[in-house]
Length: 268
Image 1 (cartoon, rainbow, N blue to C red):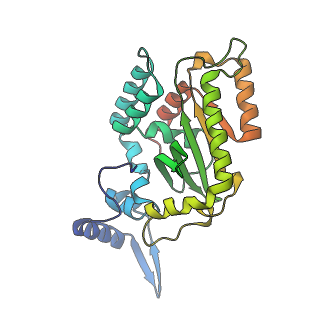
Image 2: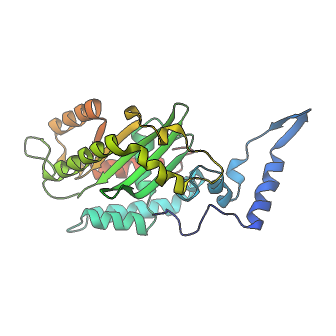
Image 3: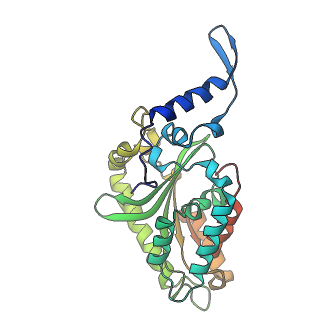
């Protein structure tokens, strides 16, 4: 599933010309065979920013974070959905995918991880072979290379936690899903290169991190419940799972907070 309606793996002649004109403006001076350039990336045509990335149809455009009015409207609508009666994970997924509320998901990257500021991508409904479907895969690049966040969204209501703060049935369901993903990845990670090759820029080579598994680069997130569901023991469990299993458990108010913080930001 692509993020966008148009295909950003191709540019129109007008887009190519506009892009080239701006690249020419980046040249400050020439010293023999060396050029001194300034960075005008934010002024590139939107399509060119996507096209020049590793995965054009999954690229998270940092310029879109400046569209504050639109993002705030979507955030408020999402908050209303969370507070509505009988809201469930299917309604949440439908909202994010149909309303292009993807910033709600990738805001997790900036709030809780230290990569993605050199490039970030989002893959909705990411297939792990024929066995599993990940709600969202976030891929981020930093100076340390590429890392991956597998995200499972569960219901904001139901048996989230027990009275003593232990993890309840809703979270347990999501954590079992992640355990299944982890087992699958151990056995089949290299097969994912076929999927990534289908989506990458035709002229770019697939980095090694997408081919050979490094478990230190894999992270997992389960989102369920609301802030009031979390108790002192729940937060202790969250810290322990993050340290020992690289699995982060969040409630949907964490998503509201991280999404609010990313609006107007200059990086992921």
